[in-house]
Image 1 (cartoon, rainbow, N blue to C red):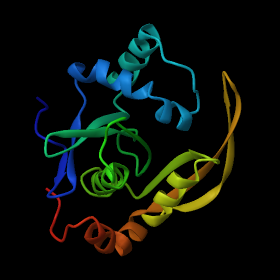
Image 2: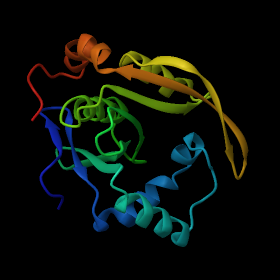
Image 3: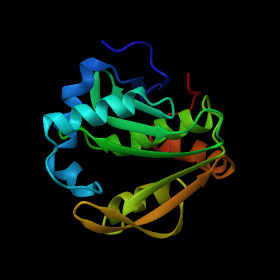
Length: 189
């Protein structure tokens, strides 16, 4: 069982830091066809490649990786890259293959509440493959604004992505309405 959550919002879910018990589950999720389709690299991740990634990312003090859950059901992974003391961060997420409908919205709300709350971030950004219009629209619903396209070189060739940015002020202006849409009217804990 996971330790106390980093953040929990009644009716929306909680973010728990990953631990070694999550290692194999995260690899299965990373290899799910829908998840791979949205990643920069789309090949199936071998156990050795996953192990190397896990050891590097989980031990990096700038990388914060969480399992999102609601009422004991794991929704997926949320990661935030924030160097210690930085006011700018980047984030990403992916849903578990069997996550219930609405998991992405819940994970995004949890990530924003954590980043702009306890983490003290002022600007949050993310990158989404240009063809992933559904996730771009999701981020825009939360207030992210497109900041342009970027090209990332990958082992499978160049990938074009949209960079999206959200400030703490923009989130504060949208927060109550977005959380209300998810069925919550109180405060995060």
